[in-house]
Length: 182
Image (cartoon, rainbow, N blue to C red; front, side, top):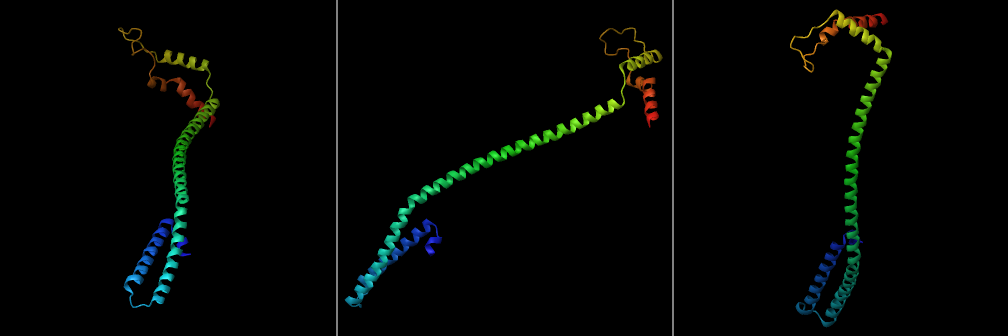
């Protein structure tokens, strides 16, 4: 029972140690114990030989189990390698899914922002005719003259700046409409 709880290597070591001990006992009985009678010597030796034979049978049984044990251990190592490769694959897929999740969260945020902008633009519609009319008013009321040296393609073109646009009637009319709606 005790040997069954140990591993195969420990069982083999224990049986080998027992065999060595029994051989030493046999040699002691044969050469050292000269005081014993022949009958006592024979009974002691036969008892020790029986134990030796039992241990030898046990040793042969354990040796027969070694090949199966080695095959099982090799199979276990193969399975452990497969488990490790699957774990690596799972962790790689998990990291890719995390990246995809972050991308989806960002895309959802941008889509919500865009929808909010579209809803706001639908609520505050501005027709292109109004923009043209206000642009004409801005240029009429806040006309800008180009310099004498201005040529086409020059970055200092004669058009209203952001400051001119912010004080124009277009902005004033929009703020009045918003205050009117509130």
